Image 1: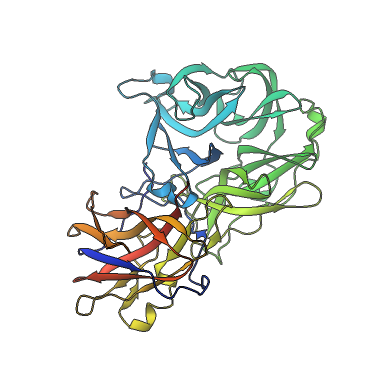
Image 2: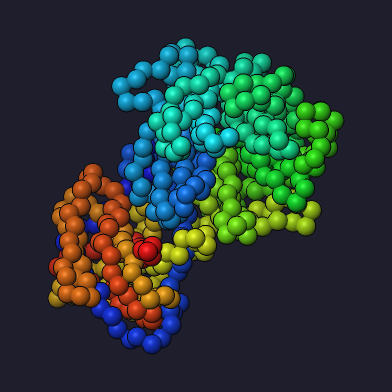
Length: 483
């Protein structure tokens, strides 16, 4: 289930970057920003539910539920994940899994524990019709989250149905939280201690079961637990209701981080009575849930990663395309998270501090509408992209202003929405070099073309395009080149 998006654009593009108007600082067109979804829908209609996103060695890594296999993507900046290649974790190419764990590989998470990488995932038997999902563990053979991996173990859990395993360490102990029950509903959140990353220690205890109406939409379900530890509190964030209801939402359990977690009384009264993150029909975001969290800037910025749809009443198994979204959140004084409201797909969100990417969304550039040759793309297949179609006049297209905050070298990316008659993309760099790239793609998809590096001074710059046919442009991205 790769995560690029269907789209359309004709023609051969020739472009020139000219260094003009040096002196003025960056204007309103500069956006060190990104837009959701960070993983849109791909050309075959594949989505990216249950996203697990983390940072390691200056890169973003993401796992998500895919089609019959475990996959990851990796990129240096958040906005580039959609264009990063999807790579397989498991099963290895040419290897056939045993029938009891061959189907419905769900919710993979990659964790670094005691210097080793482990992947926790859910699977079930193929072709039996029995929903007897179990949680399995892989161990990396190297010091990289990319693997390769070897199969380590099934986690021995008493519930006939056990999914969505996550692990966390607290006070020197390793814990597993997961969703389970006799069948897929009703499903509760359970907690158990692990003696090592692949071995359960003792019996799990139930710490949350569906009790409020917002946890029982279509089916009574608590699932997708994730741990957030802050300010002396352990917050266990979980997803509630059926993911196909369109009313999926996040709930919260909160206990002191120093308490006895394996004592049932610790969790009594720990559930916040209302959802902490839920559908926003006004912003066109439905069923947000089951994701992960990460921090940047040495813990100064915190980010909520989740899937959601833009279709009311739809979700898993009901036609909803669940795409990966990311947005910042803050903390309350009592150590609990304040997630706010889901961001709309039209919102520009400030990028995490390490990224420093200048991303210019074409449809928000004020210079284009004034030309009368720009039409905003409204095709529903452009899920997460807007873009504009620029129509040439005597082979010329309007210029786009770029605001450069820092003098330096940048890698230039042009994201266009391409169709079969597109052949190449070209750009003339300030030093006079002509760079062109052949587009290699399926018949319909978004193409993010790497045009190489360019040196730019601080101030306002223009991207001047040339084409004999219309060009549908979504974004220009300038990614700083690290020394």
